[in-house]
Length: 443
Image (cartoon, rainbow, N blue to C red; front, side, top):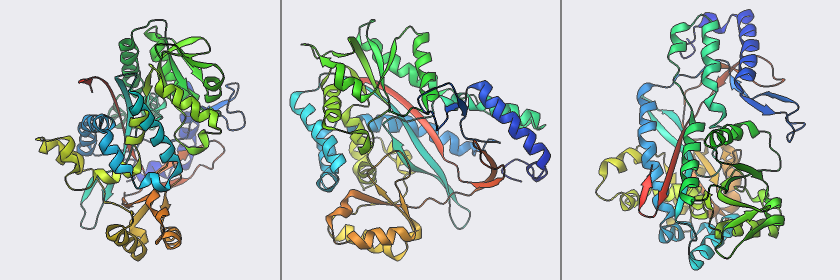
């Protein structure tokens, strides 16, 4: 059995080929779409988004655990974003050596100095997990990271269940098809954006999606846009250049872009250094942060999602600071932590370096970057750490225990890729949405 899919089905090449063709058509019918790489800013030619032929089962207890802890993670991120002393102390070593994080932190400091223009906080995040399997047969849910900035695929994942239900029905697996749960994160994410827009208090103001230059994944965002339009909430899509050229604040710090008032800035761009191509781009980010518009995320919530903060939270006693007299909440969050280790200068960081060099396959070396593809594994950890083990440059990284999931066999459907069985390592992503307003929060 391949995690619930019988071997005779997995090995039936004729049926698999038919199912793959049907799955691609079903994805197109359901709107599980991306623009093609050759023309990322045009919808004249689109293709199905990469997906598996069959769904990946998740143990019920693990799934319910991930859902239950998500509201606590929402609260934690919100509390961190409201605690400038914690952010300062947590990121002190990182901003010495990581220019990008330092630049973000300077904006954060400037906003604190001027005073926040907007007390409404909107958080849309996604916490990613793997099931960690250890010797002796034990397994546990472990967090890879929490994404507080531009957490994607809430739209496309809202339509994927119907694709997989259809495939299982065609394959004669009716009972399994009934086990697939409904999933509509797009509506939940849009609901939080709508609440922030409502609290802002201007029906003529828009929700601005701050988007990338290359927009292959536009349909993922369109689902959220459409949910907002159903509520008669206007949306616009603008790039950093648009804000540079037409953005301004009035005397009340209301943000206007291209003459239109902006109630909510929903950042889908701005989480990587290469997104800031000029000083004007940084000025545009500061302009938006200084404005009355609700930011998703605001600069402090952006910083709350850094890898260094993730590592500091794993230290003894830190979670208790945010959840005093709530030991059960602390226990639920801490149970999802993998081992996380500092690389700051000093004996503790030196111990981490020695540990990683002695057994590099046990760990992942993580820089302060989002967007995937930045982590360092195996022998490459030795190459990187040997070159900086006595240098402050190492403080730009953290070390994390490598999670050991069990692979499952499936077919990966991707444009122009061969149809073959693959050993797949899956993540479970749980979306969270919250709006806080002064001392009031809706999680």
